[in-house]
Figure 1: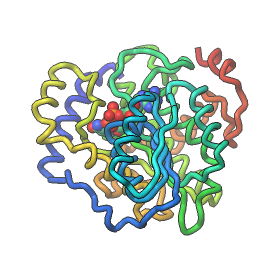
Figure 2 (figure 1 turned 45 degrees about the vertical axis):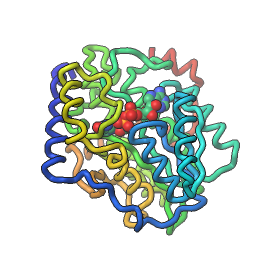
Figure 3 (figure 1 turned 180 degrees about the vertical axis):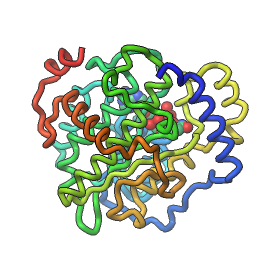
Length: 338
Ligand SMILES: NC(=O)c1ccc[n+]([C@@H]2O[C@H](COP(=O)([O-])OP(=O)(O)OC[C@H]3O[C@@H](n4cnc5c(N)ncnc54)[C@H](O)[C@@H]3O)[C@@H](O)[C@H]2O)c1
């Protein structure tokens, strides 16, 4: 973890340059996507950046989109801006703070109380390179928010997804990872990065964990014969606020080059929307998608033993039995982690 300090700036700049040379900054065409009227989606972190564009584009395809975010005003602004476009679907905001297991439970309860189906869950929210600090439940922030928060959210919504998916129209879980997962390492003995904290290593670990989780989830869904699919998306290098914590030289480079080399948020959301809505991916899960195409993820992400061990540990961290039932209260959980 501690030797990662230059990797994210390096990956960002080389990734952006590769993107530029291959001219892959196009927005995928949505005209081929079916109208999705009546289908319900939750987009975490849908108030800005890639998540906002994902929410906007899914709404324009006719979906009922719930923007799940931790900043009330930002979410309401996003909802207002999307509504102003006279889009075909419905959009609304709902409070969700992924750094709090209590907030995740409350969000899911509020959603379930409405009796709505759920056809698409986009696990998009994330932070990068935040200084060392803990979530409400005592987890390292990247691990707790980017990975474990989405792990918990997905687990709690799985029954609704399973009820909503049909044989010819599966419910879809779309999880946003990053090329940074290629340099990630999972340290099962120290998932909270206590022995040596590196914000770069912690971010990369959280993004690799999301890929491992998604693949294992797909295996269990297939084994059960569920009509739910799980795919992972790499949005590319996108001009968003995610880079607010990078070092000042990287920030300067980004300021100078982002317009030319980085994808716009709209372009960055293309693959998430593709994974959420494309007929080509009907019934297809367990893929790593980049620029609207299936591609290979890091070798470590296919390690089934690692997937299983991470899954088990994650279940114990959030107090969920492997069958998906809650066994521990938040209070027990906090004392266990701390
Ligand atoms: N921008 C890129 O180049 C890039 C590259 C690879 C992967 N990604 C991934 O794309 C996803 C979206 O990032 P972005 O680039 O749009 O960044 P962004 O900073 O614009 O958006 C992040 C979103 O996450 C939300 N969020 C942050 N903390 C939260 C919390 N505690 N609870 C709920 N929501 C919270 C924010 O409110 C925001 O809506 C992230 O998972 C990121 O890791 C981005």
